[in-house]
Length: 428
Image (tube, rainbow, N blue to C red; front, side):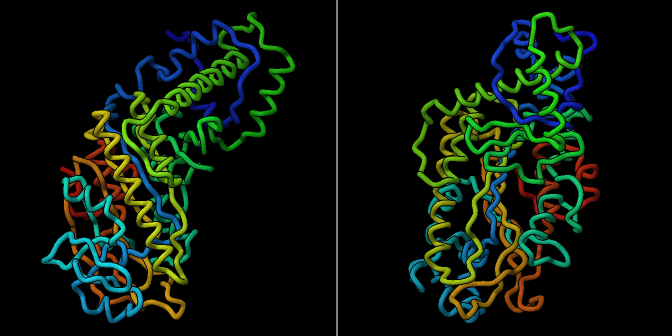
């Protein structure tokens, strides 16, 4: 149990600290670290009302603008072939420009890039939901501006992140740092809330908490080190608070390192995305309380010589997703997890003069897991009714968020998203 004047973890998260191992360890503080994952009222985050402790959301960001038309291939549309004489892929069984689409729906004439065999296997096993033409009104073709819009869930791209607001709302204003974890060099704006700040690490050895005022907290930490961390530190004091919180974080980082050292239950490919997902799977297997994980993969800005580059990315993406889902199933955790894969925009319908594609608008979103509505959900955008040469979106991305937050995470969607949005049924 914690002290009657227990510290406010929210204050610490607001300020933040770069974590480091303490030279000294105190039994009193280590005892407090054992309950570091508990909220101020003594209840675990997972057991709080409105926070389903069994459900996890994983987000995979495909940075650079994934070419949706060569990812979810409209091979049955003649306009696709006319607009991309050197890039259009052939219909199933009839290779063209180096490949033939993997059939998803013969009636709709839609398939996957030939290198997305991993996603095809997930589809055939009922674990893949494909949402074509996801975007937003008045699209922005800037990487940074468009990504800001997706990450904040707001048309102006300003404010806190949509997942950060989820953590804020789900934890009733007292969020826990381990509710959201980004595996990568930096934490995305999507995870930043008004009070919630995520954990981010490129590798378990670089585990750190993110905050808005690391400098001030680092100075306070150095003052503590100079003063000495003595057993006589008064319980409930600022020194006690800082030491207890930092040791708690160190315990968490030690746990993550121990988790990822375990041999995974399946074989993973060697790509960077696969390694990130392997880390996520290890943390899920270890029973971490984290509810949101975020990983990313770059390289999708294919302005020139697209076929080989995009083909390699498709293989890495599909193979990593399949290995991750197989690992979750082997753990018995696949039913607890839904994974969403998105990119900030698609590419233009017509190829350019450099055998590539330029920045476009709407693109497909993929949801993975046994609890998704399998198959293609929603209409594919028209290739003739265009907006200045670009696709018109069919499903607002906030509708996808609404499905994930409301149906999956059981969050107050209007509070998080600021409105209601139409979307096809995406979850069983």
